[in-house]
Length: 105
Image (cartoon, rainbow, N blue to C red; front, side, top):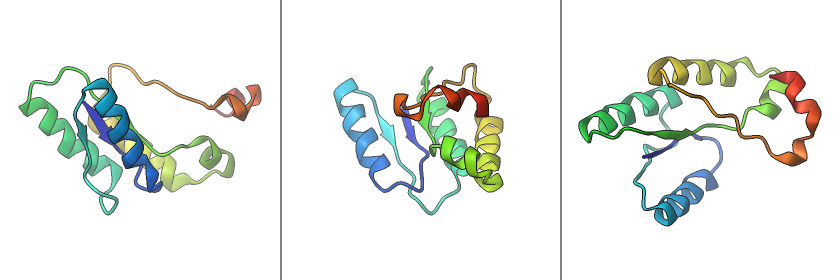
């Protein structure tokens, strides 16, 4: 199950829906007027109702945010992590970001 949690980038939903179709996985979209933690809460409940074992939530890209020290976006991610209580967290970074990106994690 894929969850759209990037409420700031308009194409995020479209891209995840296309990916979900290719993988034959459902994609859940709540909209851009809902906080990411609320999206996580609603879709986690949906996953539990459907006995889904694995959920992947796409969140807002944060490396640029971390470089600018945008506390509100980092707080959103902390809230999402608190709600989902994930077994694993995967960080996906664009190779164009460079090796120094790891210094900010």
